[in-house]
Length: 244
Ligand SMILES: [Zn+2]
Image 1 (cartoon, helix red, strand yellow):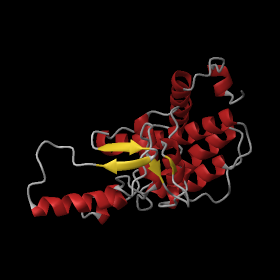
Image 2 (cartoon, helix red, strand yellow; image 1 turned 180 degrees about the vertical axis):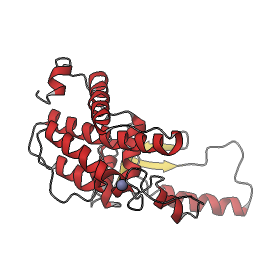
Image 3 (cartoon, helix red, strand yellow; image 1 turned 30 degrees about the vertical axis):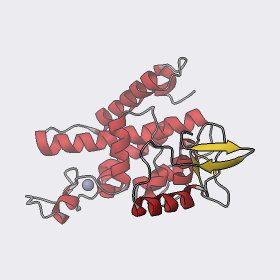
């Protein structure tokens, strides 16, 4: 505003400095600068950020950017990831890495040429340890999912091949929002527990039983919900019977 006057809506720019335009070059640059800024429509109100995704520019808001990004299917698998605050951040990140097949399973380490004594599943020793074998198709994982699905009163499809498929099943399940989020928490807790148990076997030579793992899954998922979901009337008895 130090460099223009407004006369009945018509903006006139002036040099406005005590130093005069002392050279021809400066004179030319000033002329070019004016040619650019004269195209700008000056209004006497505060500046706002605009952005344009369609025909018209509109006011920029972070929420609009978020919904714009959500519409882009850059990685199909991550559509099932919900970044739910009922789950600790590290477990959300674990799930995200899981669906992108970025966990450090023995199969993944072998692909990166890490020397290993075995690439077999530490539970069954019967197949290569891939993410989906370890967490879904291994006998031990199947036993766990069977009990978890009975507990949550869902029917486990006969052929479940991936965690993405399990998450899709839950997200398309017809139920209220609290139940749906709770089911998501249960799937997260189950994958997390299987992964921790696998690490205990490999790095601490510590084994456990299916029933102990199930008990831990119920307990840890209840701890998360109880501390993070703000559902004051959900007690342990409701959770244990998955009845709320
Ligand atoms: Zn196995």
